[in-house]
Length: 398
Ligand code: PMP
Image (cartoon, rainbow, N blue to C red; front, top):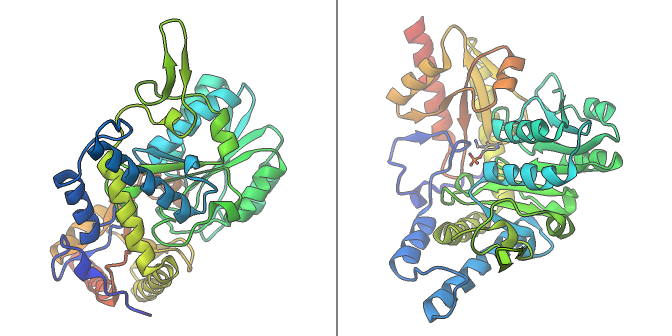
């Protein structure tokens, strides 16, 4: 393994603390914190109201970030990038705007068993409103979305397929190109929830051929409260507004209001200006390391963790061997919350719970798992600390 050795970039990670909860939210490198501090402390102003110099400059920086995001995920144009609060808001936007305009009674939406609640509940809400029906693609025995089984379930009634690019619980990676081809074969659109993919592998939406892609800045070493919805421009242009307010209009009268073209049409209100600036810094940070290097680093850590944990007889591992940066597990006879609490006493921070994926928990036959997830600041010492911690858990519970 090539150690990335980046922990020194992260002021909130003290010596001796193993932060293994990056799948929930990533720690922030100094470069991002500095960009945020500068934006509030030196260059702050609102955007798109450029009658004074400061606002014009902030607008330039804001739109430069949009271009940076577009390049980062292989979008055809910056206008295809809509800034939202996070993946959750991005999916709700697609469900309410695109779904509201395109779904009718009897249409079908294909999800999978391993989806995060944010890629389930927005579809349930729009299904209730429109009379559309939700189908669920099963998983393979090792915890991947079973695309063969999904292919057999897909019909011309399916208008949308919405899948996690990488599972936040199992770390399994879907074959995104194949998913796009399968969706398109029946005339459906494909939405990918890229929350766990963009921080740990190169993503090119053009090469994948999907129609919508969402992710959250805070899992990509950027600020909270900022995220991205990408959609192909022809799709975005045909979508009606979702939130109404300032900045999303062309002309307002009490008789009739007309709307701005995308992306402004979907960015009502004062945007999270500093979040957008911080997201730019986060993308610069990960790209300076290189997504292929991050991918290789996390793959190696996962392999080490899985090997070491499976050598402990008391541990059950979930998910495929080649999971991306995330390892879910159970310690026999010990509730995951107890595992997490005892690990915390050894300065190892993991997540324990249902990970906002209750249908997946039901499928696995558990009510919670323990989850270790890696980032650029982790190394072999963190895997060792995790394994020592689990040994202590088994000693305590004897
Ligand atoms: N999808 C996946 C796969 C996730 O891991 C998460 C965050 N846990 C979300 C969606 C929701 O992201 P957010 O809460 O930032 O909107």
